[in-house]
Length: 278
Image (cartoon, rainbow, N blue to C red; front, side, top):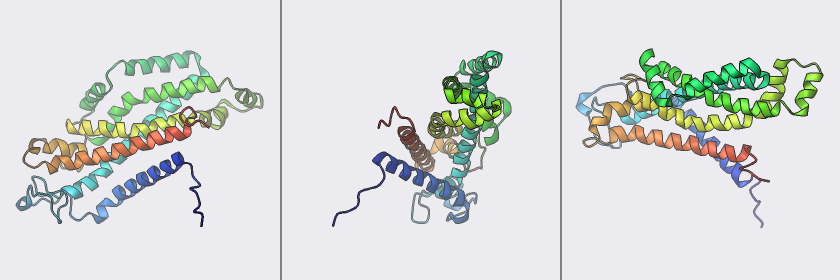
């Protein structure tokens, strides 16, 4: 009996599996507060710094809290803050780049010079300065990184828009009586969306690490909030005595960022014809 061949190409098959794993990660993180084995905020000093065991798979921290439960619940703050951040900079940067590339002239010069100002500073250093001014908290950390991260989307959207607006079908839409808004959203945006989506997928891991970095420096999530960067910061002095307390959230960051990067690379292979030749 001849076994049926896989109906999906290898690259697309890989992308589907990565998408499935990403969706599973989101679902596990979203539902974590309802099924974690212990209250992630319940302190019990009698259980402080217990090594990993069957009851506490990742051990306990200095306050006797279950590290496994805190890592799972902390994924909500870390992952969904990164998603919100990418959504903000994707929307803001794409809109700015579309209008800049389509209309040109003074609007184009203003938006590009504004982006030059933000790109002139080292990104994370500028984010630290903005977060320091705004104060602690994940909301302020997201805003700080959004301020310095939108220009790359604006420049990519602008470069794509400059090319696509010269195409005959754009001129045909203009001659048929379509308004500028209709042309931008019905014809221009769908034509340039693929590289922007690939960039946003690759950016998820980067933004997650940068948010964790701000929390590690005390400029993001504040204790006792369960957030991976903040958990690593509060436990960094125990790396030699109780390494599981800092290694567990570090491993969570590593696995999540690796998954997002693999997904971004796979999407690029599928959506970019230069990487996916026929």
